[in-house]
Length: 260
Image 1 (tube, one colour):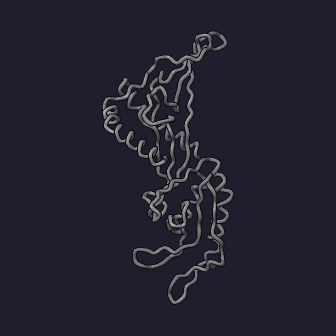
Image 2 (cartoon, one colour; image 1 turned 180 degrees about the vertical axis):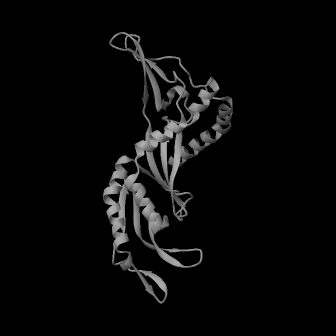
Image 3 (cartoon, rainbow, N blue to C red; image 1 turned 180 degrees about the horizontal axis):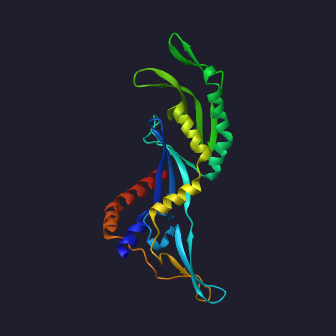
């Protein structure tokens, strides 16, 4: 891998896998962040990468190297396009929230399934919901909320089938899930392993070249970064940044003026 390949390698900030499509306007994605920065447009040496190497002396004075990976991984439940309220919602689901969904959400969705025959009624060849049978489900994910309540899905041929409405942070932003989609959602909540998924995605991404982001402890065990492979921003990225710089300056000024 030459220096140009290294520069391209370091451009990537995240990996994403689509886990499941939910209705016509929601998707679950698995995300792995490869580096993070504190502000837009910083130089490479200010980025905190998921991958680094260390060089040190062992107890016998032999020169050794190690690899350390520190990546940020999580699921997102997000709209594919803005909802009726004009907002494109995105709910972050980390390991703790996923476990909470297993404990608090799955039993209540199972109750919807067990009482399906009581929830829905056919009257004059039309499907109706008896809302007195079960209560809406609410689960808080951090400072965000997801609601579930029985719904009806209209197929392309005009026929109606039982379904569940899932609301994302708003009673006007919802998608209608068939029960088959609910079963699949429950399966993913019950079995998904965020850490294992993240390591598999990083394996696909590939191993960085040897010596990338090397920190040297071998000189009196003092942490000093070596030159190694220094990130050099490609010219086409610099050009693109210069073309958009005016936009960000104007946008910052507009927001600051609005706040005043």
